[in-house]
Length: 239
Image 1 (cartoon, rainbow, N blue to C red):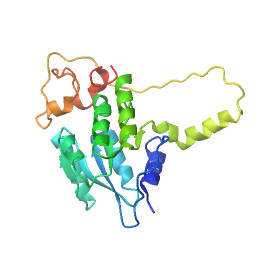
Image 2: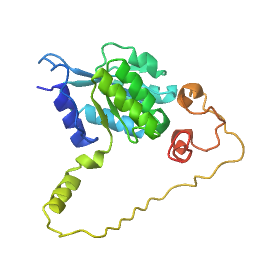
Image 3: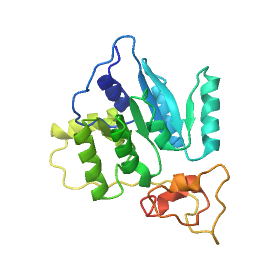
Image 4: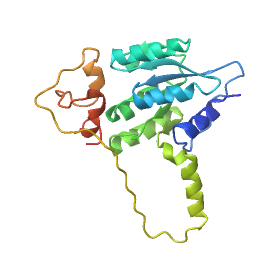
């Protein structure tokens, strides 16, 4: 039987990292299902939905994105599988739905903490993509909210749950390599230029830019790809 606890554990083995969490407030009965709402439907959000489909007793019932075109594509994908899904452009409307048990936050970074806190306040348990916060104060506010409302919150540091990584850590912990004094790692990945473009760019007609910007400063778009280049800007990504 799928319970809300082993749901999170099974999810962690596939795409997220487990963390120490409080006991679930209730265990679902045999005829119940865990209902999930996913906020942010790009690469990570889509990946999570794909993995949720593999879990018995779990159903994604709602998706949310500030870009209506992305939501239309998500809806079409559900229809191809013979399923339906509710669409919301404003995450607050999704969070108001009483039948949603768990919320996944897969938005740009600047939304992570606030969206997670809102979800907690709405009575949902939360999985939030990394980084869980944009700064220390946001992170503290998120932890305080989770404790106050006694909700489970997990962060998406999925390599901590990777089978190979865990096996290697155990190998190190058992002392097979002796005392590790130095380690060096490299990561190469080709990217297009992340330089600014000339002048403000047009916001796609399908995007509610106010909702997309949310808690960040509302500024003209000065990158070529709204849905990815936010990574390079401190207000919305890692800078």
